[in-house]
Length: 316
Ligand SMILES: [Zn+2]
Image 1 (tube, rainbow, N blue to C red):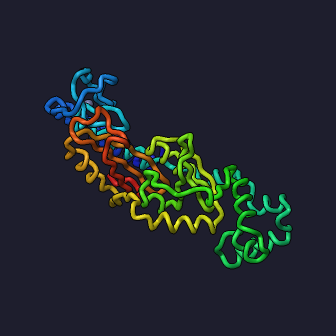
Image 2 (cartoon, rainbow, N blue to C red):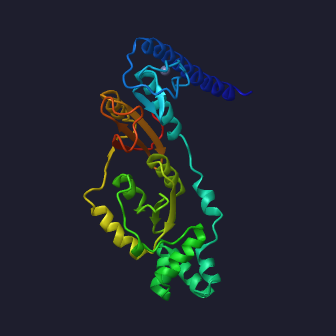
Image 3 (tube, rainbow, N blue to C red):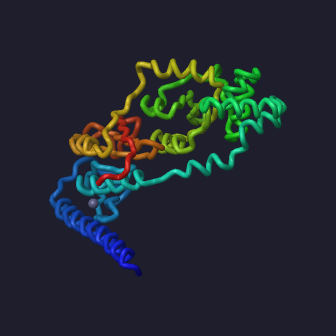
């Protein structure tokens, strides 16, 4: 090992040991604090151990419980805060392999060509125009220059992404439980849930699988996504954005999740917290009930508060 390599090894070992010591210290602190903590709330006999994996203290079947993370009970504020921060850190450092998702798609121009909508010359001309100007989607160029219709473009996009194309005249946008800030950031339109309880999400360029899973987790119902023509999307989009009833999220500064901790710790009843990662944000949902209402807060019995934290390099 070279001198340089060795000093590098020492540097990384130091980081490792200091973070290990920090974890140990917080673990000891946690065990001291939790033995002194008071637990509030009503019993839920279905689960009997603290969900903090560093604690796992048995919660007596009849003991009241008040703090939950992803629906799992925590024995104390300390255990809750520790698990909450751990969970945030995990979501924070998760990476998305966006590039490979794109790589396996059949090019949009090829699909239109195969369907006989455009000629090879038209496709090349649109690609050239896009290259020269350096902006604009190829679909827009084909529409402007060669009269390809919005429906033809939406159908080809649907084939490219293997998803349906929604006829938005048949759908109404609805309060979906998704905060307006998420809808705006990710440009997505929630549509009235079907009889089967499925929530549809419509996009005007490509479906977003990360968002679909996040909404599914937060809203607790099955979500399916699809596309819409650009014009019909824009029309509904303006309506949805102007909707005064739109539920907003509180946008936090990066790293300012203490705001959420304070919110949860100052509650008087039970609190459950759910976390989902989006491409550029962490979405945190806090469900708060008034005292003695329910063993576990749900969207039906709780006040819902949403937070958006922009994802930047982990700074703690
Ligand atoms: Zn615990």
